[in-house]
Length: 416
Image 1 (tube, rainbow, N blue to C red):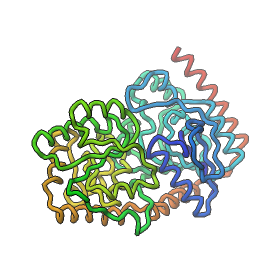
Image 2: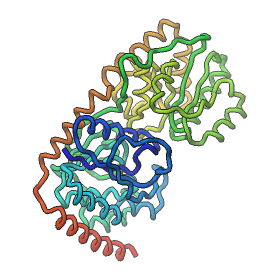
Image 3: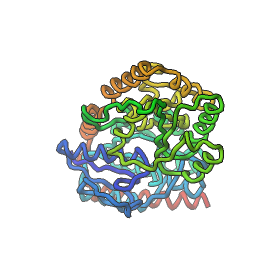
Image 4: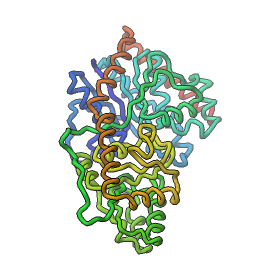
């Protein structure tokens, strides 16, 4: 197949698991014999590192958005970005893809991209590793005006959806006001060899916890800090938590120092993805009290593959794939619950800890191997491509762009 892959950010520069996941899939599809052309933004183009994908066009404009409070000016970029439509149309005309595989469309004009591809009857596989339509429900009058001119967003037969979890599919569906059709569920995978990441026992008898995510409140750093403080105050101090990641590092570690916990919470910097499994194999449990809307959390599957027991917020995407008390520990997202889980690990004997770590490793290596899931992604793309219509790419893409430009001008006039 000829696959046009869309992503707002694409490595070597990346923000999180979404971009790295898109990169893994792109390389996997190329190695499986498909022709892949990536269309992305110029964000992070100054990052060092090589890109193993030959055809990458970095001409999209990206309006940075977060899942926090979104400004009205940013919300427009959920609906439309005419420059990005022109870039998309140009590649459709020159590359002539069989299917479009869309990853993170946030900030690119996600709604307009989907509507544009639907107007062309172009097969689309929408890969949901996060909520790419965040903000549609923030300003009702904007949504009403848009839908009056363009119609409500829906997904027709030519659209296939891959989601990391029911959690993210439900969140997207609630925002759009519909139940997503044609959904294939694929978890956060890990690319590993059978001999990689062998579990490492503790050298000094202390229990070893690790936090490996963005250092930010929504990932649970405040909850972790409060839990560690409670453990130490109650005399359960034979442990440490190593912290890996970027984000609000300075302010977080200042709070650690102020509470006198710098012997129990140690910042270790950032780790390359290729080294992650070997790093995680040296810990007993992962501390992951992330926010409830976490679409999945790749680090949970990575930790389990390395025999590092995931302690995670119940209800997040990754928790759908694990069994509490068997191969993970699920918690409520509060310091009391995390304290209880960490205390449980601290009270385990060496044999009890080894049994739980081994159970996590066995389950994860069976269920989260990338080579297991790549053929599933490939089959979804093949299925979608069978619906590709025969059409004049030049004429119809130009016509769709002209119509979209005209309707967008009417929308702006309505809003003003």
